Image (cartoon, rainbow, N blue to C red; front, side, top):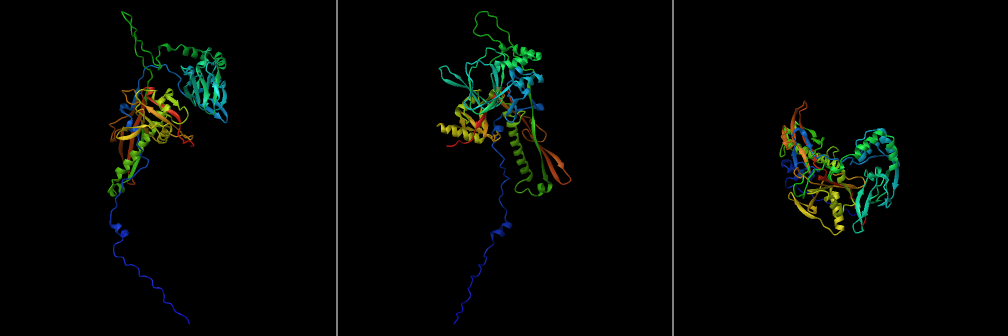
Length: 470
């Protein structure tokens, strides 16, 4: 006997009793934000630089006459494991500055002998005879000497492009005032006094150049290499006073304003119809200006003609003692100038500074800058700037600067009062409407930076920012 089962009864679908939210949104307006842009940064450099009005588009930096010559770094050519100095780069040596004979410079470069070194290797010993100059192609070398109380003290840290022992080429009685020890593997080129003398004896024009170099009035320089101002002090009676005048550089450096430009294009239909709640033209212009300002700060840091990293005086470039940024490194950077206004570093570098300080039980103070609390060392704020590059080896730089014309510091250059000026030093000029109904605006900003005296800007180079293993 079979038993029939009744089919399963499904519940009836629920009846909609109100308007759905999806349909309701068709009649509602949404609350919209203005267009956002991740590229925008704090741009502390643009905010902290004092901007100087630059009429005529050029700013001339007049300085006292200086006899400082040949303070640049030397560049090399690498072919596999073979390293050679570029002959023209020998002109960066003080005694060869301005010497133009390519054939003689090539002969000198050919006498340079390559030497590879290992970490911990002693390259020169303090007190030993100095009979050659060493040109560092790659690597880090520390110089140490003996302090007043017999302890070992650090003198300097040298790196790529530096050299030591230049006075040994002309002084037969020269001796090493320090011990040079390799901190990393590397390569240097050495030129002995005998090899230099061999080239010198066969080059009359080089002999004349060296004689002229030797006759420079070094006794009339101050410690900065500037022409000395003759003074008398502490005298009594009717002593004859020295006459003096302040000599100037005959060819002072001039900084021309650079520019960043773009053409902003907007369709008339967009500009006419889609302006609520945000004006399309204004928002397009706002974001374009933000991008231009970001590029402006990048150029002020990295441009080879006027950027801070490329124009820092070589005597104001120092190396870290051990790699990471330590309090000692920041102190050495501070002590090279008066009135340092601020440090500038990549945010990752600032994080490395914090790690090094914390590992030593130190905690940087915080100071108020423009209403914001920022870390500081010795009362000098450490400001972030992501335009400072980080190398493939995870190294970066820390910049310290004094600012202002009155302080003989670093200044920003711009010209205001431009036609159709939108912001100081930035103009927005209407370029017309083309046959496709596209409105065009030319957006331009003009800028540069000047270092009034060399010690206004200092750079701590090759700062290791990678986190070490615990």
